Structure formats: C-alpha cells, structure tokens
Length: 436
Image (cartoon, rainbow, N blue to C red; front, top):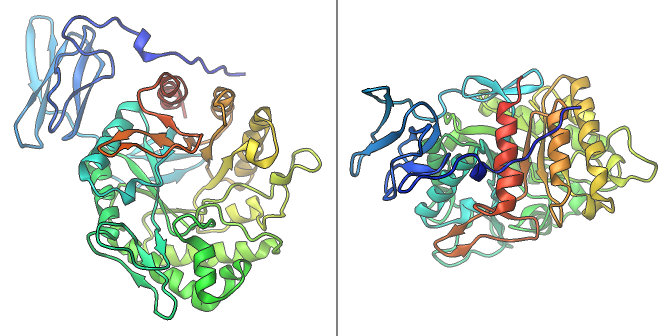
C-alpha cells in the first residue's frame, strides 16, 4: 500500500533575508516583488504572467521588460553566469486520453485540478489572471468552469449571462461584452498561464438556469429534457456556439455534456442515448478535443445493500455511459455527507470507479469532491494515488479578488491557507511525482 506523505513546502527551506522562499512567485507582468530566490532555487520563467522559484543550483533572478511579455531566466553555475530564454508553460498540443492516464502538453501524467464555476462571470480581467497565477503556483493543472449561464429575463448592463430563455421569445445566445466574451477571456488567460480547461454546457440544477429553467420554458417535465427534440436542437445550437469559439485552443482539456446530469426514475438507456448522440455531435464539430459527461458516477456495481450512489435510481449506468465510443474518459464526484454516507465510505467509491474504468479501458477522474470538515480528504487523496485514477479536482477553489473573497459553500479551500497547503499544494506535488 502506497502511503501519501503530506508535508508543507514552507518547511522545506528557511528563507534568507530579502530572498524569496521555495516555490514563491518571482516575476511576471506587473510583478513588483522580489526576484531573487533563496539559495538552492532559481527563478524559472513559466509564462509572461508568472515566474516561480524552483529547485536548481545557485540562485536566480528574473529580468523583466516593462510592458513586455518577455522574461529572461538566469541561473548561475559556479563563477560563470549564463543567460537563456526558458520556454513558457503555454500548452502546445491537445490533451488526449492515453491508456488509463492523459497526455497533457506532450507528457503522460497524473494531475490535480479544481473547480471555479464563477470565473467566467467575473468582469475584471485582473481577477481572472490572479486566479490563473495562483493555480500555477499551487501546481494545479486542470480547471473546470461553467460554460453556461442561463437567465429567464435579460439583466441590465454589467451582469454576465450567456443564454436567455424569456417566455414568449426565442432563446438568445449572448456573445457580447457581458456574455461569452467573458468566457473568451478565461480561455485567453488559461492559454497564457498553461492551465487546461474543462468547459460544460448545462446544469442539472437550477443554479444559473440549467435544465429546470429550460424545462419550464419548454413546458416539459425535467425528465423529458433529454429526449425532447426542440430542447435538444437548442442545446446543440448552444454547444456549437461555444465550441466554435475555442475548437483550435490547446487550453481546452475537454468539453463536458453537463454538470451532474440525472434523470431520476428514468431507464438508464435514456441518458446513455443522450450521451451517445451529444458526444457524437460534439466530435463532429471538433474532433481534436476530448469529451466527457460530467456525471457523479452513479449506477455502479459494488457497495453495500442500500447504498444509493451505487444504484441506478438517478437514471445512470456508469460503465455503459463510459463505454460510449465518443466519450474519452469518465468522471465521478464524492460528497458522502450529501448522500447519507460517512467520509470513511469515500475510498471504496474511489476504488470502485478505478476498477470500472479499467474494465472499459479509459481514464477516470474524481472531478469534484468535498467534505464538510475536510478531515478525511487526505485519505481520499491517498486512495487516488494508490489506484489507477488519472486525476482529482477538489470542489472548490477559493481566492481573494478585487471584490473580496470568492464564494464559500462550506467546501471551499482558500489559496494561501494552511489547509490549502496540506490538502492541495502537497497533494498536487504528489500527483505530479507519481510515475505513469
């Protein structure tokens, strides 16, 4: 049994006066802080916005050109100083499934990521860039964002919305300044910082519209959303509008059908057919990017009698859906307390999905997870590392922006806190070090 050893990077090295600690930011556009790293580390240029103190011989500094995207990293060796431009962390190739893992930026690897449903709704570009910078600093590689924001009445200028469903009017896709242009900037910033994005197209829940709002608009039952022709035609129209904007961007990790789709009480074939049709449609628009479902992983063999998440009650069959040809990898979520389970139930859920995915021959990621206390999340991370799970993405990332702290739903872990270091930064480093 492999054991995950959690440690704090702050204990790795004592910080010398006027020198930056290990893994601290040391340069980038608008950076005004120190540029000299503590002994044993040098300032590595990752991209125009971010340079970081990483292990290396001697000490290092970055030389910044005001107003320029050019940064030169310098590393001293013995008495000779050499200067060279270091390649940025921008992603040069499309992410692909590779056996039970992924090839990300040309390298087969495991990863840790996170969720910021709100980042596409921000109106200050600097806030978006701040989040991306901190993700890089934390070792997080994949970010999942909402690609939807439905409204039933059009708000005033300054409020972000992506699609309107106003009674008596045809649905409208907002491509303007407070519409998909906000998502445009998220993709642009991700490209600059070397962060990969999972973008989804609709919500199962009524937050930001979703299937409930759309079902009301079309005057149908929620369970009919998946197979009503007019609904699916408009859904595909919206998918096309989003995919066409970014289908050549290497920052897109995958397109995602929905956030936590359920069809409670439906035969599992309902969602499987919807997955088959929609994934094939996306691939017809964009064969270069991966497609996944975004489901919670329900409908799976195993578990104790009466374990609701293992049942097909929510209308899902995890293995059948993962086997759909145009689905590249599986997703599942983990919220034991919300499902009437204890946190100690989590490792079995993780192991069961790794086993099921291996049987299908595709990667699987724990795409969302959270505990009310975070107390047992370290054991979940250990199980992820001990199984053939391609990645994990905690719900949710928190930061302090120009408007204050981002949303805290009880699961949020904020950048810079001690629990963030232990449960995010250290776990990300362990994932990165795990051999394929």
